[in-house]
Length: 244
Image (cartoon, rainbow, N blue to C red; front, side, top):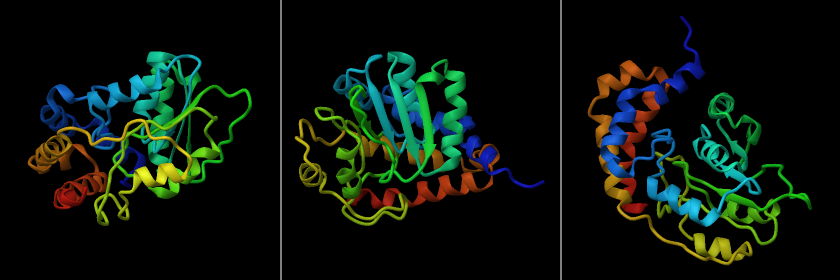
């Protein structure tokens, strides 16, 4: 029987072993609405973003690297915000669209496949406050920062999390980039808060170890290429953390 790429993709998020590994490692910091390992957001990450966004029915949010859309669903369902998400992975977007329908807030959620540096989004004069956010496992970079002013309404801003990389990351398929303050300032932003997430390394290291240990269970629950991608990432990422 031919392997269904989308079914394999979804099997990662249906895996009880993957979710259990993340939940046990993160403990009180495990965000129940997350989609590990694609979203590595903690409870504190989401609290921080929520406090900075002040989301409401008057808020319009753009989610850069939305993945399966867990962050967008949280703000649409819990606060009535309108969310547009974009991600380069069509399988992630398909999942985001399906889960939007069952979330009860599908009318507030719109997702599309595309290059996050070429969104095609434009700010209309009547558009509510537009805010950009990222809680995915991949890093934004200087190019993304320069594109933000094109879609942001004056007076709005960026809130989110990303990786600083002082060396190329094979696990994240990303080049080195760690000058976020300079990139944001060059793009015209005023930086209000820029800080390292506390305890991120231990949480991630523990979660990765917990994923790799039950390799046989992972292969039973996660289909074909999705299992291989997860295990390759889990083996490669720890060796890069000294440069992250």
